[in-house]
Image 1 (spheres, helix red, strand yellow):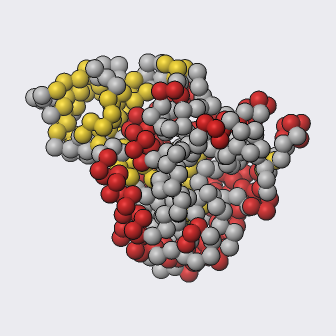
Image 2 (image 1 turned 180 degrees about the vertical axis):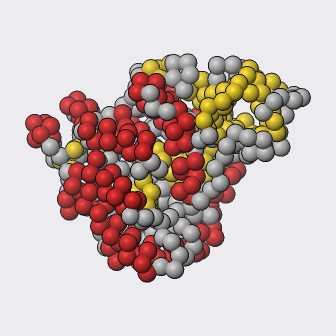
Image 3 (image 1 turned 30 degrees about the vertical axis):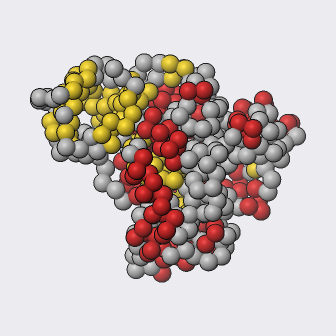
Amino acid sequence: MLLIRNVTLVDALGERGPADVLIGEGRILSLSGGEAERILDGKGLLLAPGFLDLHAHLREPGQEVKEDLASGLLAAVRGGYTDVVSMPNTTPPVDTPEAVRALRKKAQALGLARLHPAAALTQGQEGKALTEAGLLKEAGASLLTDDGHTNEDAGILAAGLLQASAFGLPVAVHAEDASLRRGGVMNDGSLADLLGLPGNPKEAEAARIARDLEVLRYAVRRSQKKPHLHIQHLSTKRGLELVREAKRAGLPVTAEATPHHLTLTEEALRSFDPLFKVAPPLRTPEDLEALIEGLLEGTLDAIATDHAPHTQAEKEMDLLRAPFGIPSLEVAFPLLYTELHLKRGFPLKRLVELFTDGPRNILGLKPIHLEEGAEASLVLLDPKERPVEPRNFASKARFSPWAGWVLGGWPVLTLVEGRVVYQALE
């Protein structure tokens, strides 16, 4: 038994407390105390449901020099995540039931965050032949996506949505038109022109979202079961407007935003530092403000990290050659707790919901609320501020665009079904 005394509760239902939370048998037994072998003082701390990341690149199999399940899932629990969806763009891609089962088995043996592997929508992520949605779902796949690749064939995407809908699987898309994106390494515009860097235009995202929403409309008309399209790492005001319009029309679409698109803009690329090279690229302040509004109003359903670790040597290449992506599992919540909640007054209830209920609803999982009988997959958060120190990351990627930023809201205890999987608290 574990008792956390005098702690403030925060979930999608709001803030309340202080409460004395008794945890045992994998569940919350009481919010008013009780006998326990272990007692923690939660005064000044926040207790929330464990976070779920819809979009993490854990690089296994085949790219373990960048990250593996052990390092990635340890980074996750240090970031307050009890559940992680791993992307399938590995070497080889995760496109078979055997590959899904192997990942789940290894993750279970590690005993850290629970892994919900995503599987490829098409064989080899080549965009030509669909994978076996039913067998992948049976093996434990949480969604289907060719993330890391754009779905250029609208007919294949339509067939994939129809097939996935029969098994209740969402289809997630990297919404960029490859022919418009070309070799862009930053947001297309006057700053890219000034710096002499190839640009990736906002229209590449908007054009593909518009097409994919029409494909979804077709799939809804043709399917006996509701298909579900999920748009990954949305980055532009126009893309947000298209999703808003689709939701108002009743289309079954959801969307996520990332910590980097919510806290950084294209201005960071004036440094020519590849730390800031991501796909889709960092956009303008106008886009950033639109995304925050989208989170508030519900057009955006979840915050997902797009945790994308690389080796130090890769990220030290010049901006044109360095790979896209940054690691963020360990800093995502403190970053947004500080930059959105503390500095902008973004409601804490809504912020926590975007890390918990939002992503769980997308996967069809029951939300966890802090009430008696609820599953004790929880995170304890400390509002005290400290700097981001990448050298101390559990991830193999020990670099960060937020290095040195002083943040509050750090996870100090993470529980999965009542088991302590991370602790930084006496």
